[in-house]
Length: 106
Image 1 (tube, helix red, strand yellow):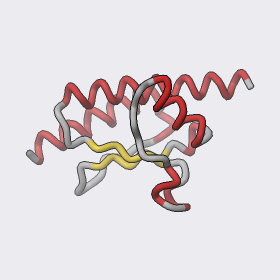
Image 2 (cartoon, helix red, strand yellow; image 1 turned 120 degrees about the vertical axis):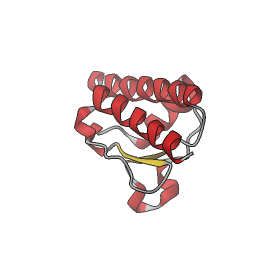
Image 3 (cartoon, one colour; image 1 turned 135 degrees about the vertical axis):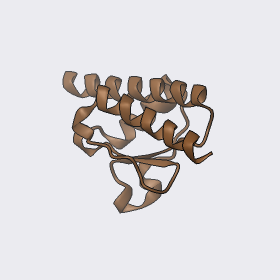
Image 4 (cartoon, helix red, strand yellow; image 1 turned 180 degrees about the vertical axis):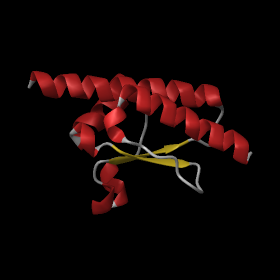
């Protein structure tokens, strides 16, 4: 199980590094939760939440759920089948890119 979870985390890192190298996301040492700092993307929390829920149909806890320290972060659970993680990453990446485009147009 540990090897499977680690491989899922490596998959997340590979996708994030390819799409958003400015995030500099690092593999966690002892959890199956990927805490991802999105602050370098300068995406509004509310706008991202709307993109995730209404455009990509991804239910994710609002970032303020984790208190002031959680501002700008999302938590991604990789304790799932790879196929589900791949779909989730595709949707997350589309939502992030959509929010970035919207902000550039504003």
